[in-house]
Image (cartoon, rainbow, N blue to C red):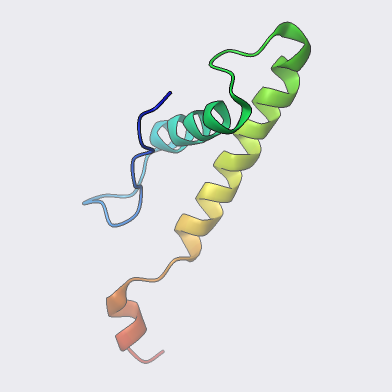
Length: 73
């Protein structure tokens, strides 16, 4: 649980769905303090993972590279 979340931007290739899910899972584990939630908290835990993964996809899709900042549109 103490590992750092792997940066997903500026890789040689786009982040995979698995990498996005693993980063979301790691984040939710860290914030919630659960490695594996109890049955009563499992639904909230899994929903949080999906929401963090969705937010991760959005930010990765919206971030611009330095080359894009320099080029006029």
